[in-house]
Length: 153
Image 1 (tube, rainbow, N blue to C red):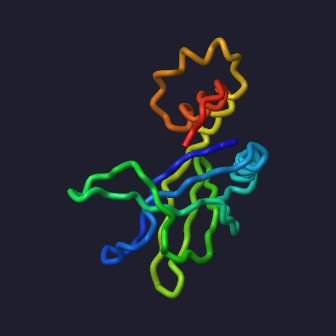
Image 2: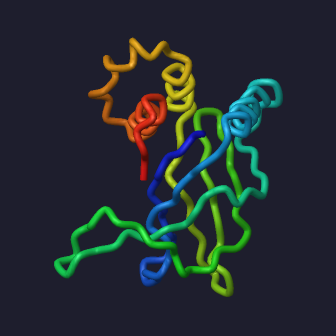
């Protein structure tokens, strides 16, 4: 299973109750379907494709008393409406509205190059995985732990 945490940007400087991160979890078949949409860009000269999709789990970072990130996450209490998956030629991300407000936001993009690397590592023989241990990408670290049956949070 594909799992990645991405930052969330809410487009209102005075609204501080929105989510700060999104946890993206999806089956490989769903991820491949999104990647397949990329083929339509060249064929039809498209800018972006969008569809309703509530995959992201919206969360907030927990801060300590000094305002530093504790790395703990809690479910966001912000009510989200109209969650849209947006696919571009190079990446995909989710855009949303805050319910009962004229405020929107979006997740950071997930690049197809990272997804391709994910599938490459997923199919790599176990004996070759230790060479990737120093890879700093969360996506690759989660996959290595999964392949070696190490519990992930």
